[in-house]
Length: 368
Ligand SMILES: Cc1ncc(COP(=O)(O)O)c(C=O)c1O
Image (cartoon, rainbow, N blue to C red; front, side):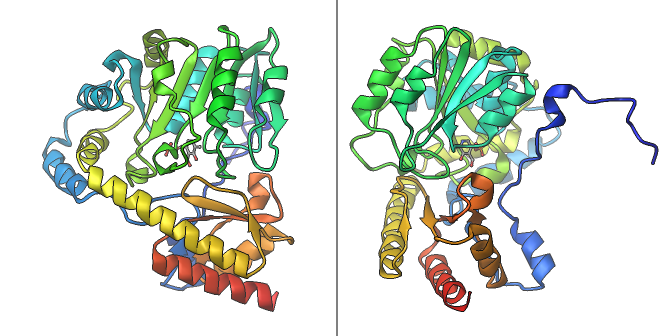
């Protein structure tokens, strides 16, 4: 093929790497030639999704030839009722990934600074770079956001701040008072994005409910998703709750049909199954307790997680442990790509998956 050297890409994207997701099950089966593989790498729901979702999708398939409604009004109206906000405060996206992109697309100009933790969800950084913004990182302290330092990093060039709560990949949360004080102190010219992708898993009472604050802080944006507790990761449905004027800006830059019909009906149906959500939260807490006890028994430490994953300190190359586990048919995430080279991040699975992970980990650690 001829080279395309004469068609240079925009300089902003020259040094951006391609996102490396958790290794897919299908890929590992193909590469290792084994059929029994467990994936605990992408913080998906091991219980799948509500049975109501399957019925809704089957019914909606007959409309597959028709474009979906552009702003998913049935879903946003249902969410508004559930969350106690106005419908015009909600925008749905092709995963909350898309809302992150719409936010940076709409608000970050070349040279604007955007503050985020080091380390946190990597899509914030990439999207800021795509727009030519400057990423300002503030190190985590024991895996948790250092909000005081983040405040100190604000200047007249600051355009946006991301706080991931619980934080991916560490699973830590910031305390209620601390976050409230932070929200109060962030100047109104700065958009403060609080990513609550793992909101539903949090059981700690020291966790700030952010939605009631939206009325007083027009610069506040809250992100949630159907990919985690609702088990709809493949369908791509996330949403953001924010001031209606921000929603209107994001709508201008989104694809007209960014969320598809099946995802819309699946999300609506999944909101009707509260019992499913409650049992997943319970199962996750039990799975996390089990893993924590086993890790303590093995003399391993981990960050205090409030989400559906644990980041574990291995005191050796996380990449090696990842490879060792892979050979045992267990896919986790190596901390190398996540900013903590001596860790692995494991998603809480079913009781059988958790047990298989611990057995494989013991084997890898004793044979390495
Ligand atoms: C903190 C955080 N935000 C956003 C996302 C994106 O989720 P989705 O695009 O599937 O809604 C993820 C996915 O892992 C995440 O961990």
